Length: 229
Image (cartoon, rainbow, N blue to C red; front, side, top):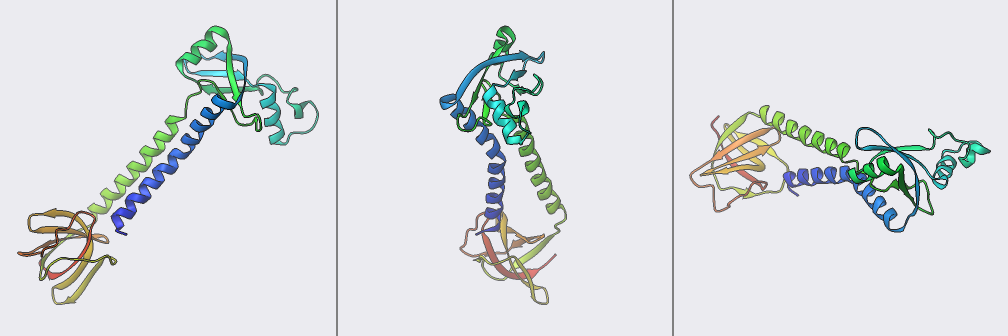
C-alpha cells in the first residue's frame, strides 16, 4: 500500500473515532425517544437560554445510586438524596428551554432495563467538544506536514533511464560518483519533471525522456540518475 494512502486512511480513522462518542450519544437519544420510559419532571431554566436543571425521576436516581455502590438505607434507594443530588444540568434546544421556562417541567427518558442510560427531551448533542478535537487534529497534521517540508532540502537529479513503478521502501542510494538510485512517492508532476518524496528529502527528477510511465501523485516509483544539486 502506498505510504500516502496509508497516511490518509489513518487520518480518516482518527477522525471517525473522534466522532464515535457523538454518534453513540445521538443513537442513545434516538433509541430512548422511540422506546424509552418517560416522565415529566420539575425543571428550571437558566438565564443563558440554553441550560436547564432537571430533577431526575426516582427510577433513574435509584439506578445511579446502585451503580455507584452507595451504602444501604435511604441513600441506597435514592430517596434520601437532596434536591441538588437529584438534579441533572444539561444544554437543550431553544424550544425545550422555552418550555421549561414557561411550564417548569421537562421530559426525561430512560432505558427500562438500564435506567442509568437516560436523556432529556431536546438535549443538545455535544458538538463543541468534538469539533474542537477535530480542529486540533487537523491543525496538528498541518503543522507536521509544514515542518517536515521546511526541513527537507530539495535535491536535483537528471535521470539516466525511465521511471519505473516500484512499491518498495523509500531509497536514496549512491551507486558511485554522482549516480544515485532513488525510490520515492510522487509528490508533484510537471512538464518533464517529477518531484519525489524520499523519507525526509524531496528529489526533483528531470530528463529528456522519463519513459512511457505517466505517474500520478501518490504513486511509488524508482529511477537511476545523476545528482546535479
